[in-house]
Image (cartoon, rainbow, N blue to C red; front, top):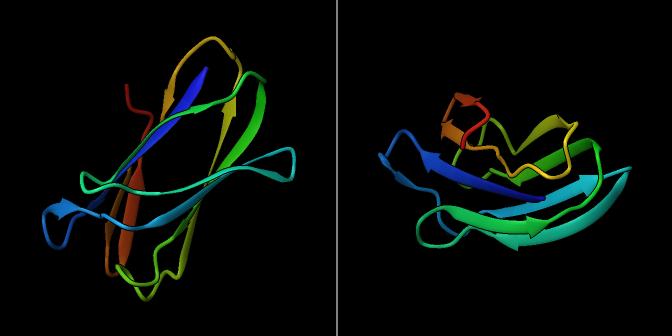
Length: 98
């Protein structure tokens, strides 16, 4: 299984490049990275079911939300999980992508 994310700065209509993101599972950080020029982090490997958290350091893009935490459950470790974040100064949204 892999986990990926894509962060879009909705206020500017552009990818949110250079955003620090960490992946947590079982209370531990299992990966860290920074979004690329396209706002993406692709292919973090993970082979276990359970609850995961993506923690985004969003303070530079959305100062009202210095951190956004997306918590999701993996039931089939064989599937790819893509969890995008749409970010604006005073709101954010997410969904399970493909």
